[in-house]
Image (cartoon, rainbow, N blue to C red; front, side):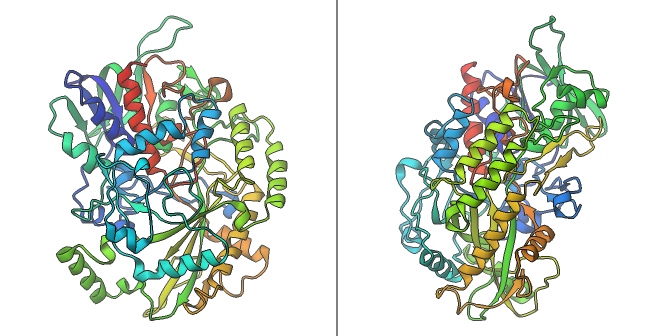
Length: 600
């Protein structure tokens, strides 16, 4: 077949959800164009404890690099994105959480009617199956409220099977002694405090639950669902339209086996290529800022300056693409405590793999970290000082599109909120790489991951050439706002405070990174610049805002200036959320499928 009712570009997390839901109507035909292949049967994909080994593998990871970043010494930053049926749901670390109700309500307040906490909550429930055992409830002292959790959805979700040798208990005690509350269910709209974040793991098989296993596999034999693999979409095809009228998408051009093919969509084309490649495909198709399109010799189909994130050519205006940024604290710990570092011994790794294969237990049954906390600014920094700095730097955004300014103003409000976290601080029982730091054989390590959840430095994604096989130019613009670095310095100081509590002082033997020699704020800033990364949660490159504010899609996810082209992936989320993004994207895709079915 070369003609379908719906053509979905991208067989990743969101694309497979939409395709599977649309294919529920046997009278409708659905095609999915996916650049990768079928890879879900690989051991590294299936076994939770091997998840980190998937990074940089060409058949699983696009392995993008940012442009050189001035804020971190002109080094590019590694940006993994899932490649293959399942997309980033086969590459991520399986953490599944939600942001606060305040943050979801902000999406609606920014102009996207019907996109709020109450509405998305229905789709969180619809997408998941979560039935924790009494053993897990007692073990982790958690009390999830059934109202906020689904039990019959496709995505399986459980509490971590491996508890990290109970190090999480000591870590929580340390935070509690500093006034951080315990949160028995961080999926009910309140995310502040310590919590055990759930994993997208099937409780029966102890293997990864992804959009490939949960949405595609049960539907792959349907006659009306076609997945075209190893095919790279090169542009959306549009028909002729009268002057002043919205254009109509008629299909998609794609490259497979070095041959260009075309597939027709009689109803809609749905882009679900992700926050980096959706804006790339829009621009290759003539939708974007006309100055950028003309620079590459691409005829303008629809002039939408917000595509790729509101970068105004020739100005210093801020953009709207956002990602979480992170650094890490690492210390050597006492030998009596459990650590994943022992997997460096082949004999120990072999024993653990045998335990997993025979009993589905041990380190490989789980992900590297289970002990999380989400903290508003006041827990680790001076709210007044940071707010004043943020205000001054936001006011300096001359020439920014209105939506960008509104987003930054909303984030400034959240700096003083007790309901919106600014820091994700996670205990990991393992050595974490840092510049100049090398793990010593036989030693065990204790790390604290520090993630800034609402950075004010925001970037852009644009085409680097007219070649659809060339990667896009991803400019994170990281640390362009000094206030982000100030907050990260306070986060590192707070990590040191945590490990100095009575609960952890018998665990930690010596600080490895930043290291005891790093003392002053300037020295800590240098450490952060050398080691800063993102948390792989890019959003906002095809934002759901009004067109006047620089938006790319409306509240039905339809691209402005088109009749039947939609975007369904993380790129539509207009503002960064204090959560790992996969649960939100599942909810977005489920809601999108209902919108499309309704004919809106």
